[in-house]
Length: 342
Image 1 (tube, rainbow, N blue to C red):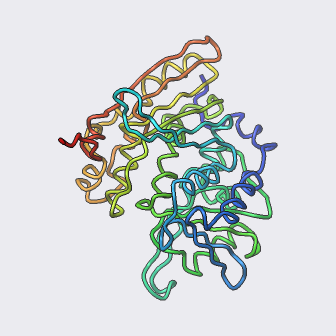
Image 2: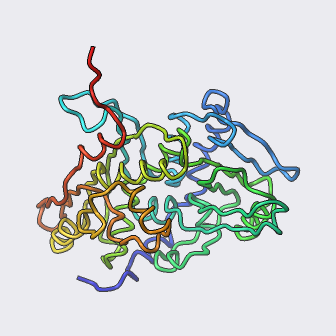
Image 3: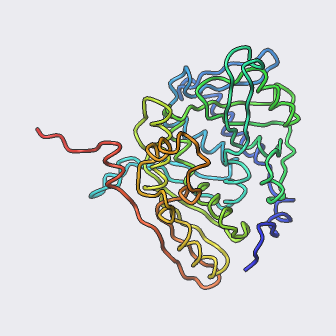
């Protein structure tokens, strides 16, 4: 098995589609149906569209599903499914599938672009957000893009900001400059984690979390050719810390992913090493873990950020390997769902 992440993926992506071009249709739908979706639209003086899906606007589950598709650069299917089977893990599930898992999840959906401004720059309080979605591939500010061998050169872009306030002008100007876009060719979508749409679009990262763990494990990314997954959609939380805890728990303890890879050795290895249970920090609610490390993500064991349960199929042998387990009781304890006596 190759030992480097610098793989033939690079040559593959030289002719890859534009994630920003593919996202144009769902972006247009988000704008055209904003009122129905609970999204508030504003434009800067120069024409940049800012879509508020949870700061001052209510947003909706439908908006979150559409934003999740936008995050994946139009290369993934995202749906909500009611789950009222006997003893369900949770009554509402998010389901995701992509036939372009590396480009959709790491080249577009991954929240890897750090955008920050000081209080002096904003004229108020400091601003920080991680940017995700197709415009990351225009700016290519992350080393990950060198490994992917991918850069988008489309003349329109869309970026999703997971933050509880609208971006200040200094951030908008930075995104425009780094992406090389005219102001009226950029759309910024804002989804706080504690909002309904924000909760949906974060949980819809269940396959992306698996792909990121594949990358962390040093497995060549071009091994992964298909990705599908599901995770429970938790109830909205009243504040950011609880929301972050619930959305992470949904994936770490309730997320299921099925990957298809090229080689049998890789399938065996991923089934064994990919699940979140391999982490020393596994077994406690994420909000408790985060608090215990003084709100410092970098002290949390990186192995924790993975789906709870995985199936990995090998094209080479036709075999499928399974690893990990669901922790439904932990989710029920955190989110409720207990019976109420008549």
